[in-house]
Image 1 (cartoon, rainbow over the protein chains, first blue to last red):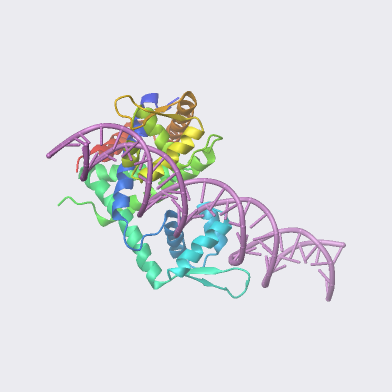
Image 2: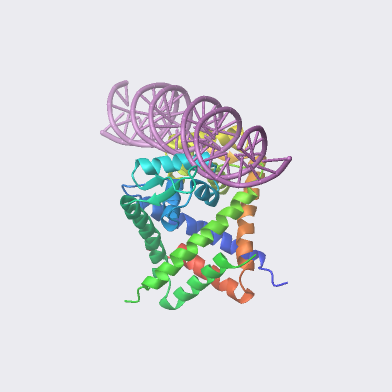
Length: 144
Length: 144
DNA sequence: CGATATTAATACGAATTTCGTATTGTTCAA
DNA sequence: TTGAACAATACGAAATTCGTATTAATATCG
């Protein structure tokens, strides 16, 4: 009862395909100098948002093996975007923190996302924008 | 004039982050037996939708080097999901066509997308669904 | 207290993937 | 007919991910 219709499902699936493609192309075009691969970029953003987190925290969040995360952290440390520290109180762990340069790159990254979102909103009438945001939030945050 | 507000941009960006994460996790959970990597899956879907297309067509569409596409096609041929044929009339080209098995896997793949979209629509009130679809289509298909 | 299990991270190597360069074979144009 | 342009492939280098084994630190419990 009150199920989405087959046609609605089909329409949304198809629209999302074109949507994703458009978004992806824009993203590829924006690939800057400080370009990071997807995992490293996500790692950097997580470390920025969770200063002092451990390597395993990021791995669990991003659903990758800890060895994979260790490599990603290696790369980011080599690029001087984050730092490994030994937290006092637990000397087997590392605490990850973002550097000045890392913060810069992370902000650049986020600016890219914001630009893409801005481009989307511009395609809508002012009256439609709030509704798009509301519906996206509802889907993103609903329980179950 | 009539620009989206900073707050709207921020809200949509943030909502999309959660949205994408939720979508991605669902996708990872659905990873079936016939699992393909992202490029191979996209290639298979393109070949299904464009029977007889050339290798370069797919490469251009997906924005990868032709050598990369050659490898992807190799993998799909090895898995018996697509076939290389020499079209009469142009013997340097290959024409890609999907096989029975490929069609099956492609449909499975699309079913996964449809399920994700269904899950999204279910999170909305029936009255909101058409609006979500309309707005997504508008963003996906607008010129400029 | 000491032995053992658990935890956090790393070292190392295998497998996969992507891509650049060079090459083969075909078609087109002058 | 010869040379340029084109479609695809062969090959090798670089990067990434992950599993297994290892190191070191902390927790547990007899």
